[in-house]
Each structure stands twice: as C-alpha cells, then as structure tokens.
Length: 220
Image (cartoon, rainbow, N blue to C red; front, side, top):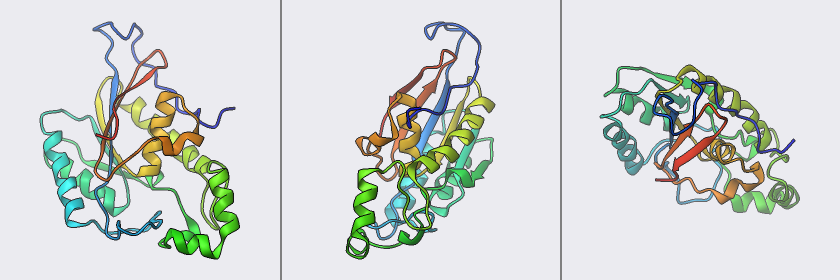
C-alpha cells in the first residue's frame, strides 16, 4: 500500500461537486506562529517551546481572519504554541477549542532540542539513514513519519466526519500539516519536503463526498 494513502473524505450528501445542494466540508489548516530559537536549525518536536513576539502577533491575527466566518469547530494540538492561536480564534466564535494530543508534532525522541549540526556530528549514520528513508526511520526514542501519519489520520477523519458540510479550523505543526496536505493531493509521504509550511501559514482544503479533496490554498 502506498505510504501516502490513508484519510478518506467522509460521507456527505451525494451529488456532483458542481451541485449547489452539495457543500464541501472545509478545513482551515493553520501552522502555529514563530517560536523562540527559530534562528537555530533544531528539532522542537513535542517540546513546549514559547512563541516570539511575532509568533504571538501571528496567532492574534488569525482571530481577525475568521471573524466573519461561522466555524463549526476549532481543534488544536495540545502544545502551547498551537493553543495560543486556537484560543485567539475562539474569542470571536461561538465554539470552544478542543485540544488533541494526536495533533502534536512528530515525536523526535532523543533529538528533541538538539541542533541539526550536533546530531549530524554525534550520529551521522542514523542521520543519513533517516534522510534516505524519512518515512520509516525514526530517531532514537521517537516516531517515524509513517507513525505520525497513522496517529494523525484517524483524528482528522473524526473531525471532518463530525462537521460535514461546515467549516472547521485545525491548528497544528509543520510535519502534521504536510501529512494532511499530502494525503489531500494523493501524494506519498516521501514527498514531505515538497510542501512548505511557514510559521503562521494558512491552508484550505475542501473534502467532497466523491472521495476528492481539493487544496484551495497552500502556505498562505
């Protein structure tokens, strides 16, 4: 089975995508704001790092972006850097955020908090092996990209199924968002780094009943 397959859009009222009676389930997929230490190339993983001043501004700006929409749900990784944005969005909505551990960033194990150069120096063989097989090779004590996808896909399907024909927000991380976007376009996980996810970026995906997901906005 292709490693990029997984999430299937939920069942919504049958019809063609051009049919006005059939409304897509729209996912507004966000990445958290800029984090402290962003200047250094290091793995934050599931560490609860803080936001920079810009990161807090980016989080607050999301509230204004969605103030004219009626959101059916707001979901977020339970890590602080995502919760801030979810809380800001909820200030102008009639729904409370739901924080999900399954939406956390890739668990990077013993590499958490370490600069890339340090890892390359201390464990060059494993570093290169992971570059050669990013999908299946995990850092010591961490999880592989495939394992990340396997925990993200079910919760995303639950979210989409629970809000058929409506609009929902998910605030997550670079790795999580890339998995969701790759599944939406039917690309394998090996293409992870073909998609950019900047701090504070905004993606839109429409899920239809015919099994099609359409990416309407990417890294905005």
